[in-house]
Image (cartoon, rainbow over all chains, first blue to last red):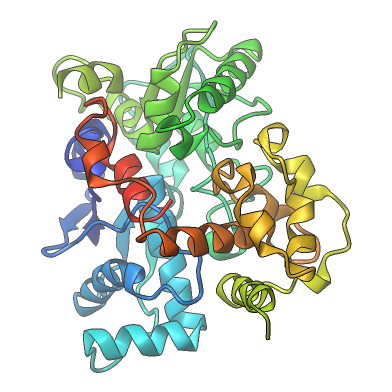
Length: 274
Length: 126
């Protein structure tokens, strides 16, 4: 199985672990992730304004390149997944944005949202299948109690992202079961981590991370798993009463598939070194 | 059309929401993770647009407390999308001051650990 792959800006430096473990896992699962030749940063935030077409063009270029290759487009970062899926939805359903973007990029035939965007977790669920994944696990993470931290960008708005039930998701819990660990359900798993406020208003993300980690630990989690570099940053940066380690889901998958080589690259270490 | 009416119409246009649909159930405010930090609460955003008082909304603390987490958008039973209204107000302010929340000069003074995702979001838009 071959997919176009859109890594995004952060996976090339601060979130290398998310990218590199995913590539190792994809190999082990006979999935080929072919990085787009000319991808540009998605902008990090989906431009909500109806009159903001220019800021959506980098996503359209990536979608168009995948269309030309006749491949589905895979992403790993929650933010890229969010932006690419929403811009794709605009290109399908909002004529003003579609026409403007096509005119500007001089696309012929016009791009009309033909590319299918998949988060790597969706590839695991819908293409590989969690049952098959379970059979391929050589080093099950038996006994580890893992809290799935979804955050916001993976799930909402549910109608557009069509990723999972935005109020009661289960894809990460099913993933955790497939790699042999035990999922811990806790109330704050789909609450925001404080996101961009850590730049100029850090007290708020600090309070929110306290709630998230406290809640997960209170329900018995030993560690948290995420797919968002910003959640990873906020959860690691803010000192909390509970010191729960946070991992990218790809790192745990690499461990379970026996392809995690060398010392653990947790984001904490990586953040300090890079 | 007065200046205030124009600003309110621009909010409706940019956000593509219809504030008249709001039934004030308060679900957005109940869902908002930064509710306690906001001076104007999410369920009140629509009132400022309906009363052509975007100026007050644009000067509120709430503009910079919204996380863009879409909890209010997801849960609104009338599809009013308060998060889009506050984002449109934020956009109007940012466009007037040169289109970015963060200036390039500020970035060099920030800690090295910041993920590009955060910087690019703040720089390009937030």
